[in-house]
Image (cartoon, rainbow, N blue to C red; front, side):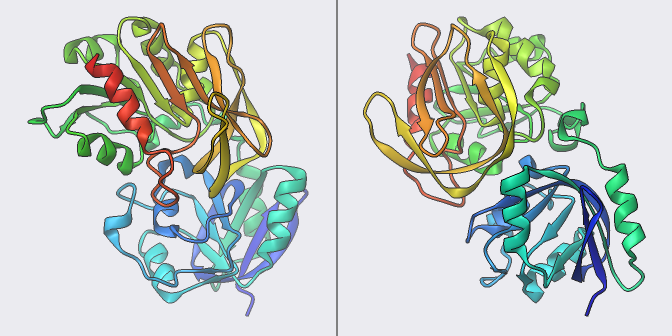
Amino acid sequence: MTDAYVAIEGERIIEARARSPGTARGELVFTTAYTGYEESLTDPSYAEQILTFSYPLIGNYGVREERFESDKVQPNAVVARELTEDVSEWLDGEDTPAVDHLDTREIVTEIRDEGAMKCGIAAGPDATEEDAIEQLHQCKHMSDHTDIGAQVSVDESRVVNPDGDGATVALVDCGAKGSIVDSLEARDAVVHILPYDASEDDVEAIDPDLLFISNGPGDPKNFEQAGAIVDTYVGEVPLAGICLGQQVVANALGGRTTKMEFGHRGVNQPVRDLRTDQVVMTTQNHGYTVADPGDKLDVTQINVNDETPEGLENDDLDIITRQYHPEANPGPNDSLDFFDDVLALAEE
């Protein structure tokens, strides 16, 4: 049964089956993760994107809210070879269009060869090819979403674990996964979650032991205020960043970021530490990377597949950042010691 249409750049139309009705547009990307679909679908870093799962069956262990990384489904739409009823009903309840019964291997191969593409989707009994094409024509490049932080950040500051005995952390929320906060709380840190556009005065009022820039969606150049905070406090307060956070830190300190062809999204990305030569498996979700770290940051870890920077550090300025997600969820736990390392800086 064809009652859904996927339109990609060049106005090529792919027929599919609607599992959750509606129209959507966004950058078409794929993840290689074969578990953790609940975490992926609630990861704020997928905002303004259409997520394609390369694994053929999504939903084979149900939907459990305790696995969510945020309070809602984040991609604009979902594409899979086959979605179970549990996931389809969940996405329908979240008003997130979803389609299946199409060749996702072909889509993933095309993204890999051509790069991430604009996409439009129309799903449901009244959907037409023209509806999908109209969505495609209205789709913007990720870098054009200049205020994407407002979609994924907290509206007001809040404190997690206020009675903790550990370090006081100012977490600039550019779209933070819940498991990052959980990892800090598990180490007894007092976590002040600040909006993505928080001011330098907001940070000063906290008097933190550690400034932490979170992950998030889109182009790091559009998170100018987070970069301004880094510029103000670098050398004064230990500094950490994850994913987009690493990119924001690099830009603020004179480096340069760039958009990748199709990004890194999955739970099986190998990363090599240049100091120990040890390789760890990591969870990743990003479409931008640090092209040049500048002269204030040293590259300490690289991606085995394409040698892009995965870790940046400056011992004198007390800076440690990671491009991947050390907190995993889902994925391997090889790199959880990142949180011990950055909190050790704060304690010193």
